Structure formats: structure tokens, C-alpha cells
Length: 360
Image: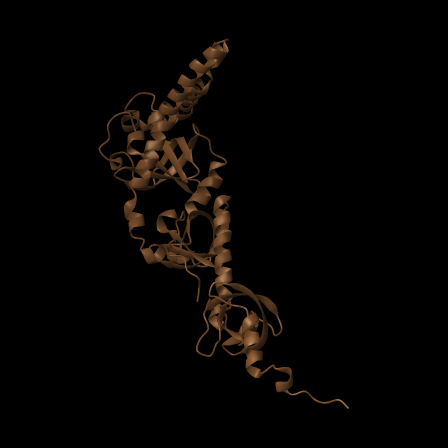
């Protein structure tokens, strides 16, 4: 005859059982990413089994980086997926979970990768503010400063329009995602432009430091020092807005999205841009060819004139350095002027305008 053993007979109490559960219970901490299974969908959230003693909870606002109106848009019963532990246990022993935080981290990782690749991305403008336009990149809110929007449309009319964009700043710690439409257009245009090329443009704007010339939808700077060999007090004395001009490209800076222009290099005689502009335009191609020949001569290795290897090293290094000084140094200085001379447009951009945020 078999006898039934009591709890006392086997020496295993309910307290022992609870202690055993505690011994083998996983320890969950905020910041952990765990696997969980959805077992109950509620109107404003869901209960998730992650192996803890109490079911964890994910509120609807933590279900996606994008807006969610119904939990069933994101989750299905019995679905297993990753969850981020957002907070520690509450008084009921329940953890709070998030999918949004996982998507947020991966979105920043993705945009950092895109920036490292110098990728061009496309995005719809969903809003504008006093400083520029707002777009979404990988679910993150990005900001385009007004000075980096290359279009003649009023900002308000950009809502719903898709723009090509380049990354200017990706900073997860400061929650800043800043992009440039102008740089994307300039880069595309630069693929068809060359230093020393003469182009026809229209004066889009005039500042004390120079004139901005629209050349095929992108803007280049004709700095005051590159208008004429003769001294000019202000660009307004030479140009009016909407004037059609012939200019020569003297620098293409793809990284900064800037084009530097010159009419001074097209003058047959110093001062012609002030005294006889038509002559400058008539002889523009001829003067540009002389400029290009000068550039080619400066870039030609001096080693061709020296048969000895040692002489090649000594002689070739010097003209290369001189070429950099004569041809490249001045446009670089001009690019610095252009950056420094435009603070008023970007100074209007408030810190909160630039902050990249995930939509609640």
C-alpha cells in the first residue's frame, strides 16, 4: 500500500519554493534589452512576459518612434520580440518596457553611418519655423537652417516637398540633427562644374562683403575682393539684384557646399569690371583660358625639367607649394569670409529649432 508523503515528509515548504524562485530569478535592470512575448493587448498598452515574476507593461507612447494610436498597429498577441527596460519595478513589482527607445538608438546609429558615408538622403518637409524647416530622418526630427535651404519658394510653401539633404551635424548626446539642402544641390551641381569655368548667373542677393550669384539653382559667392582689381567700396556700386552676370569659378568646396566666384580674373585690364563691364563679358572665355593655362603651368611637375631623381624632389616640391598659395589659398580665405560673414541668418536659429527629437 502506497502512502502519501506530506510536505513535512519531504522537507520542502512553500517558503522554500519561493526562495528557490528568487534564487533562479533573472535580475532585470533599466537599460537592458530583453526578449518578451505579448500576452495581453490593452487600449493604452500591453502586458509582456519577459520571464519576471510579474508581467511587464509597455505604454502605447513607448511602442514606436512614430505616433501610435492603437497597440495593434505595432504588436500582436503571442508575438515575441525585443524590448528595452525603461524603468525599474514599481510598487507592484512591474517593469516598464519600451520599443521606442530601441528604435531611437538604432536610428542614431543609422544616421551616424549615413554621415560617415557622406550619403545624400531624401525627406519630406513636415513643418517650418522661424529658423528653417523640419524633416524626419530614420524617424528622428532633423532641422534645416534657413541659410541651407536653396529654393526661391517661401519657407511655408516647402511643407510636403521632398528635399535632397546632406548631414551637417549628428550629435546624439546633444540631441541635434542638422542637415543642408544647399550642400546636396551644390554637390550635385559640382559634378558638372570645374574651376576655371565661365558660367552665367543672376545676382540673388547683395551683402557688404559680396554678391550671391544663382548659377543653375545653386548659389555662389562673388566676394568683394574678387569683383575687380580696382578698389570697390561696396558691391552695390557695381551690381543690382537680378542683374545677369558672367563669372568664373575659382573654387569648389564640396565638403562645405560652397562655390567661390570671380569677375576680377576676367578683367582684360584692372578696373574694367567697373568701367567697361561689356568688354569683360565679351572677353570672358579668352581671359578664363589664360587663367586655366596659368593653373596648369603651376600644377605641372617641375621634375619634368630635371633628369636626376634628387633634383625632382627638390625642384618639384617648391612649385607645388607655390601653386597651393597662389591658386588655393585665396578661395579658402574667401570661403572663411563667407562662413563668418553670414551669422545673421543662422543666428536667428534658436537652440530648440535645431534639437532633433523623436515624435511622441
